Image (cartoon, rainbow, N blue to C red):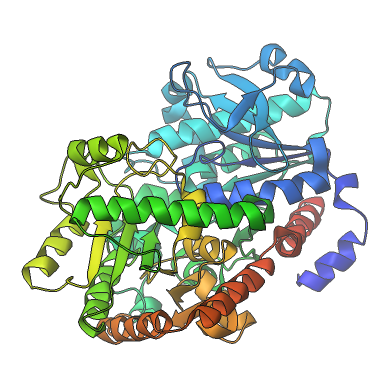
Length: 558
């Protein structure tokens, strides 16, 4: 069935008239772990405007009194006080509240209770019904499945409690970590419409993470065979069956859509690009203040670490994201910074910041003391925080190698290996508040299904360089004329064999931008803001509307 015929079948009626409860489940609801948190938290306001209190997000209740979620505001009276009145099996408990983000959507945090003790029985059922191979599971598989199944049970019992017919419930599950919940719901509440979104296939990420070439060999890979080779059978099997059994299967980019077709053997129904919430970006006066304060903080910190005085005009580059050395392009970032250093004239200086969480031990004691005292020079190494594994951390190892090679003379590299939540003990400013301080960001990922970090960068008016293997980079090429001057984004080509060429292209773009005058840089920042305006969820949400229509149409035809 084509998208147009689906729309014709469903008609022009408002989906909110067909759905009394839309539940979206993810491990990252009120739990800031990675990019999916950014997807859901920035999408929430627009989705909430459409569905209002028919919408509920479900996330894991991993919090305690001593360690509460900073994003969850408990409200016990929501859903007719379901948190205290809902009858749930296996010791499952819930808390209801609001997500402290724009739109303040309703949230249900689920504690699986004793669900894990029932998993063997559930795994057997899912093998018989859908062929899910849980026999080879390890690591976080059991924990994820316990949460997913408990979330499915909560969805069913909540609908019963609210007297909502299953046919008027739509359940959206994100990533393989919730796939068991989708299958459990399909088995025990078959009238409920389901959607499944993979933000990155588990086997594709594993192929790249194990150093195997993805792109040159792409059409020769068989997902099932690679899962056996890489000991990924259970996760891959679960993800594949969730994709095949969902009423609608989506992913976030054309890049990952091709991955799904090849490795899961299941073409997606809709590509749902990721958007951004403009309310996350401060208005002009506050933005200018944050940029000024952030630059002053970072330059002073760099001065304490090097014994130098950096002027306000010092060029500052950054990268950020998960600590996946090859997949996230941290290797290429460091080698590009070394190439920039080689090309810079002797009278030019820059600072490159790596804002990537590592295995943190504690803030650097001497640097922390100097920051708190407001004076003194502390000539430390490149780390703001000590790590448990400084000898083996890949970023640390490569920085030391570059320093031993005699490069990094004009470009100072500073590694901030912690989450920037304002409480790190050194920087003391959250990531979004420090982002405006930078002049340029580089995100040369090898494997990047979407790429929220470059999107966030342009949303905060900071020009960026990314590549065509990132979903965001491909979206830029499809939507704009490439180039920092044109749209605030430079997209370079990456494949399995052009590492040095990509390095040189990124370095050339960075050095060229560094040589621009203030007027040209302000223009580039304006173009970045312009580009990010096109990612407003009010435009992007239409792709989800299509996914909802497909799910409803296919489900009603069962």
